[in-house]
Image (cartoon, rainbow, N blue to C red):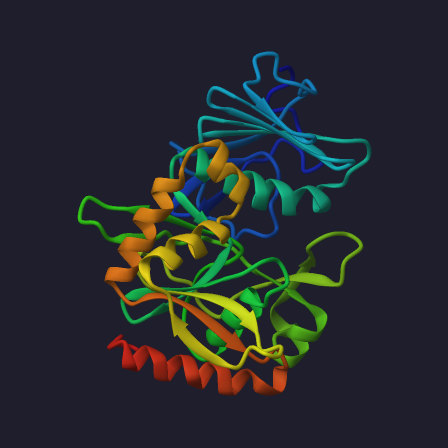
Length: 318
């Protein structure tokens, strides 16, 4: 690996960020993250390098990835190659003429999320907001409406804890805590308009998408116990709107399916982590499916239903 730390088009500047409570030092500007003070002792470093297309000692591989001891090589075809090492270092190598704006969503999202999995964290494809002194998470596949729901709750005064992915650790006390992520929402044009967030809209997520980074109204800086996890579903027949609690077995399956990169959970043999997370959350509020209408006209009713549910769970601040 050569040219470690070589300049990107941003020049030799360094940028500081906070990802899942961890200080990050990057030589690449990541517009999806909110800048923070540059730490003298970063937990994660993001640097440009010339990367070989394969790991000579790979122990497992697929069409776009290879894994060796403590290392994971991932290629986003036509965009970027990334080498992730020991949960601490992210090396990236742009493919062809890929611009920095198109690197951000993969380096600042996919790459950093996988680094947390290398650290042995539970990483869910989720957004989270603060309710009282705890966090509630909304899980689902891309396009399920996680960010839109969290942004709507932000407009009602609930601080954003994390968006896109949530990094969770299980403490010695058995409590699962989600760590604060200095991340902007990623919202489509119509969501920005409906939520009256035009004055908070920033750069496009990618150069050819009408999806934009959006500043939250307020963010939480504290690691918070996870009070509830909602897996989002749409009310297409025969499904009906409502909130249903999952038992422990189903909760563990749901959380594994909502892992940021589910295949990595298998490859890294991390299934017990997600069972422990399900048990920790179930001891608190619980894991639920939230079936609701996706129409913006129904958003206020969905938020009201959530507030009612939080009061039923005895959550202060609801």
